[in-house]
Each structure stands twice: as C-alpha cells, then as structure tokens.
Image (cartoon, rainbow, N blue to C red; front, side, top):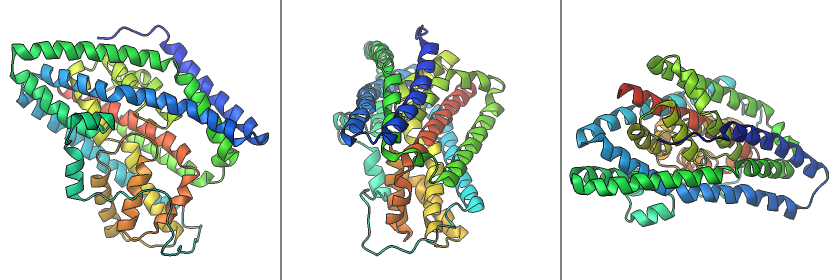
Length: 406
C-alpha cells in the first residue's frame, strides 16, 4: 500500500545517534550547571514533536479504521475479528499484570526502604483517577466525536469509527465514495507522518539532553536496583509476548521484530507509544499484515493492549506498599490486579498516564498516594521501557490476528 521510505535505515541510525548525543550533552549541561531556562528550551523540542504526532493520530485512526472495517465486508466479519482481537488483548493484559505482580513479590525492591507512613493529608500533584463501571462506560462512548478527536480520546474515536465503518459498508455503492475518500485521506496523513518523522532524531536528542540535565546522571543510578529489576521484568514480558507470537506465526516473528525496530526505538526515546503509532502501522503493512486487519487491530491496541504500562501498574503499586511496610495478601493483590484490568482500559499511550491510574488505585487500597513521589524522579526512564514494550505487544497482536484471518 505504501512505498518504501528511501531513508528508513538512515532514520533509525540518526535516532540512535540522537539518543546517545542527548545523554552526553545532558551530562555536560548537568556538570556545568547550565541555567534551567536553557534546559527548558531543549525540553520544548520533544514537546513540539509529540504535538505534531498527536495532531495526526486521531484522523489517522479514524480514516484507517473506517476503511479497514468497510473492507471486512459485513458485521459478522467485524464481530469475528473483534472477538479474536479482544480475547488476545485480555489474555495479554492479564499476563502482563500477573507477571508484574509475581516478579515484584519475588524481588521485593521496596522492602529495604522502611519509609514511615506519611501524614494523612500528604498528597502530590497527580490527579486521582479511580474509575468505576459507570465512569468507564461514559469514557468509552463519546458525546461528540469532534470533542473526542480534539482531546485525542482514542478509545472514543475507535468506537465512533466502528459504528461509522459498519454503517458505511451497509449502504453499498454510496458508501464506496466515502471509503475511497477516507482511503485517500489515510495516504495523505501517512505522507504527513513521513515528513514529521524527519524531525524525530532532533526530538530524541533534545528529550534525552533535557532529562539528564535536570535529573543528573543520578537518574540512572539512584534507583539502580528498581530500574534494573523493572527492565528485567519488561524483557521477560517481551520474551513472553514474542514466544506467544512464535506459536502462531513461527519464524516470521524475527522478521516482524526487524520491521518494528524503528518504532520501538522511537517509543523508547520519546516515552510515548502513541508517537510510534503511524510508523508501526506502516511497518506492519510492509511485514505483510493486510491493511483491513492492521487498521482495525492496531488502533484498538492503543486503548486495550498497553502491556508494558499494565505490568508497571502492578509493579509500581506493590513496590510503594513494600516501601511503607504495608503487607498485601494475595487475595488483595489479585483484587488490585482486577481493578487495574478495568481502570487501565482506554488510557492514552502518553507520558504519566500510568501514574494517574496508579494514583487512583492506591487510594482504593489505602496505600499512601504520596508514595508516588518515590517514582516521579525515575518515571521518565521507566516510561521509556514500558512504551517500547507497548509497541511490541500491539505489533505481535496485529501479526497474530492477521495469521488467524489468513
């Protein structure tokens, strides 16, 4: 569907160079005590880049999903593929949360901190987000698709797109005009993506320079045990996801990983799996996933299948409880897991979204919300790993569903 980008390999190389150069410059800034205003100026570059990406995500999801559903042909096909997709997402979500819970109990990274319980009125500046069934359903169904697109509420955009796509397919020849138009729109938006991606090495460079300059090299060492154990957990999760993918698509899993290495690196560098969405869509089609499957499964994945983020939620929540010496028995931990299964659905793949959900979960289980302060300093580094894992999880899911529908 889409032509090969001539500079694809160069772009991957430049992103990696930008990552390393940003670390070096950030360290120099930190050692030289460069003024905070200069560091903040660097931080503006990745913010602008992410805004450019977010600018195109909603129209891209809408156009590709409507075309994908319309090409499926009928409601039965949509239902069949949708059921397989959601079943895979639920299994992957549960395994991610369960693995995070298991590993944090084995390693117990917070057990030696022995922190006193904070005062009852101690809070930090993160809004709590404990979502009940009523709030979740209200969040799923938009009152206005324009408002949903303006706020980049991808789950709401997905719901509207599904209804719109089914209705478009149902009206036959008249709907073909809309399908052709939206197919052209998706090509235009992907071309815009190509232009925006030229700026990604600069965004990665500036993002890393700002993080290191503000936090210092200590961000890489202060919580070295926690960081090391969490990244080990993410690696184990990735291997589990890859193994599950291998069971369905065999040795082609290696080819898939080669195709998505650039989106993985971009998500890692920008701490946003959303930033990698357009490129992931492109690479999955180059891998051989049908457009109608890719444009249906991948947008759903960004609302329902954030594997790295979900592992982090159980890992972080229990780590905070351990740090305060709060014992959580297994039934309580499983209750927390089920709560996170609900509250995590529909969160955007953007920085700090996981922290917002964790804040509400901590309140539900009487764990001090102020404990999130333990993670704020290193959260940008942890967010990089979980964002990259999200890309792997959604890519494997799309490849597996494509195989099942072949």
